[in-house]
Length: 159
Image 1: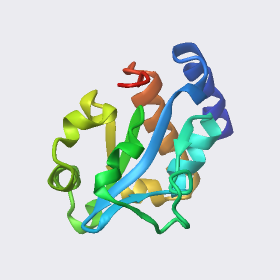
Image 2: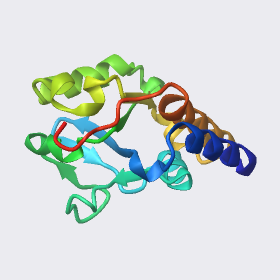
Image 3: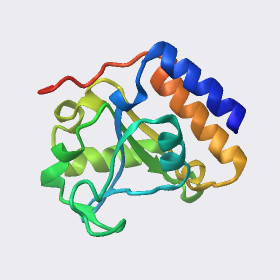
């Protein structure tokens, strides 16, 4: 993992410069609101190891990791990238999670920067929750490929 992390940092420095200039959040919609993670498995470990700017539930004033953000406050998570998860183990495809976003946040695809620019990444929850080295390396590959190796639209102030 350390070798792959060093390589990813080199790619990010080459393509982006300062990773702290890239904002991201892990947020999942549920019927009662949006779960915004403080620490969420391999996602938060790898994002922190790479130096990305993560918005957390605590940043938004939630008292603990189980806090829910009201759908009406969705613009609080307007970041360069939004990561969400689906559960293939339970037969839940990414389209089901995306439909829940759209159902609860009218205009979701146009309202927030990430989905507007194809920077909303929905990954299998088993990958996010897997703390084995393989899981860390897979999340590292996802973040590197989706953020640094394909190019992205940075969220400008007021965008």
